[in-house]
Length: 222
Length: 344
Image 1: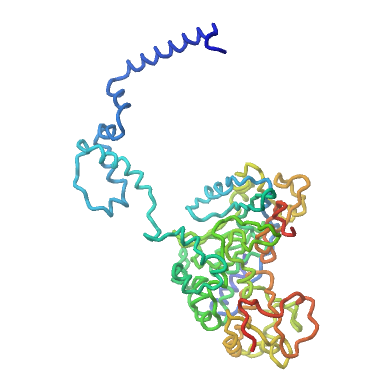
Image 2: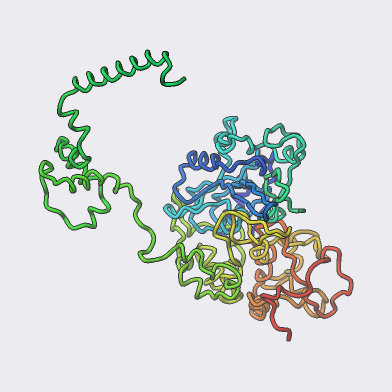
């Protein structure tokens, strides 16, 4: 998010059409999600809690539980991958926005969108490798998960996390989640998290703030 | 417990008492109330008080009533049973969504059309795609945001490049019908849309390779967007001490010059064979670069959404060093066969 100095500089540059650059925000702390692919039962309570919280019409889904199934008898398997906006360290949606509607919070790295500033160009939707921005054709605007930022500011957790009956979805500082020092029920004893699971876009694109406890068949390294 | 058990005697007395109580309750009910419970739904509606039912039936079906011819007013008291049932069902009809699908279109068949899958999609033309998806080329950007921010006065950082022209537009139109897209590119729908699975499940094949899907996304930016929206890898370039936006003044002392071409020419020995792919117009790009400094930078850092760079293939160029630098090891020496141009 640009500070006031940047805003002034950008406004001047706009008038002169002078080239300006883009500098990603480096947050003080980066919050992120952790999802246990193995223990998730795919009940979609998180999806519904999210739709309820955000008043979403049919169609847009900020959070999505994806079923991954495969194998050949008797070696068959099924697991779930659960993703919303991954509040990337360097989000691809943010630099695409021509109106400044998308911004990243300095204190916790949450990538939020002010949809009242959206003009519906849908560039963010195209740029996001994880399908997070959701287009609402009824308003011709884009909206997305903001990690229930109002709940975060109130000291609580997002609705999706609170709705998870299996406690396989949680949030926390992503660096602590990754090194296993964040206390959470989503990571069991002996579990180790990974940045990417099979069929997921390359995390090097944006460094998404999400970790998975992968199913053995979902490990990228095989 | 069996039926001839002596312990059944109190149970029988209990049930006899229960039936007697039920009979008393039925006897105490008013006769019309008891009859109402035996009526058919249609009869029950006709027998209901007329005044509140009639307006409700008329007012709560806006969609169908608006389209249907006006019916003569019928006193509710003489509504036939079938009509009364229809009137009672009207509130439910009012909740039915207005159909947004075109009549006669078979969406399920279209969804699973072979054209959406390999191998047919590899040879699909824009005309075939736009036959159904023509709305992607219609201008659809709002004139102002819901808060009143006019689209005409907004400008993103990358839109301050010299190559950017025209009003705010959708990404589909920018890549297919804008002036720059027409002049310098030859993008096909299938460059990005390479066959998607309309389900949201991602099957894992028996092998350990990816199934070719991207969870939650039908387009993989790494193989499409990244080619022109990757980071500018200035660390790998000799003579550059920082990102191009900081260094360009050193190489472009006068307006209108293109600092990239100061090194990237056939004499200097840096990569001078480039853009040899069918989705770009290489000659037009080279010509535009001579007169517009941002032609190169626009796609090589000026619109970088992603934090990594695209691994461009190293087509041999004149005076190309024999030894491959560390950062370029593993890169292909030719373009993707789908887009490679025939060798001259």
